[in-house]
Image (cartoon, rainbow, N blue to C red; front, side, top):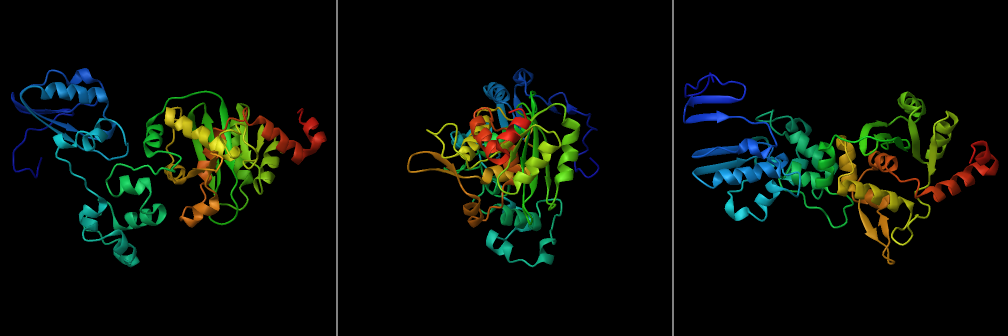
Length: 376
């Protein structure tokens, strides 16, 4: 208040009163009935409007029925559904719409994605207002995501995400999974083993539909680190699903020798549902897609994992079977190996459906005697 041209009274935690007819009240709620009873000249300000429940929007319509009422809704366009999204689509004629991209802010004024890439490194940290979006952050996102990524569209350009026809996941689904916190059930892990270089070895632990931990290592030999993370959960772990093709085979055997309940997963083997999927990889990827689509996924807070999930593409074979884009094809689009995404997919893989594939893979690797030694 010290810099205000108007001598406002000191505000309480939730309200500011100037007189009996001029006051501001702050509400933190998603209960529509708390918005009843306001009449006359009213300004309703919705912050984080994307997350405001439909019940609140309906209550605001009741307020707008009488008096002089204005609504200011402010939010990030992360979900391509809901009342805030409808304002920019089906209801756009009734609103004054303002979209602010990172390139509309003072730090990036006059720049374009193309000219931003040509700036020298020292210029990236020269920002008029350092607490706003910076040149360096936008350039890094452009290099990591590319101009066609859903996250670039929503978090940099200020547009609601446009889901590509061949995108396996929607940003809306993953954003809802990020906000969702409920969920309990059996403890299951997924492990994707990375090779030397930029690839990560990624581990995901989940209880029922809720992800409780995502870890990743770039070490050439992370075996000890993986075991150290898993040891506290050893007694309650129902299964660890490991992509056991290639370099993953050694890690899977190491965990089995440490007496963990390991499932050897060969994603290149035949799908359980051969009428819809080209291979097991497509089948288990689609399983996670359906969980995300139907709201059976929670605790997805790892931003790198979200980025990777959004980068996954799928197509149909000439026979109409779902197939997932290969890593080589993804690299040609500038997409790095989605290690964390694959760890999540493995953690949620329905190994009961894929059980025959897993057993065949284990028998091939261990031999009949090895299967008997494990009681299989």
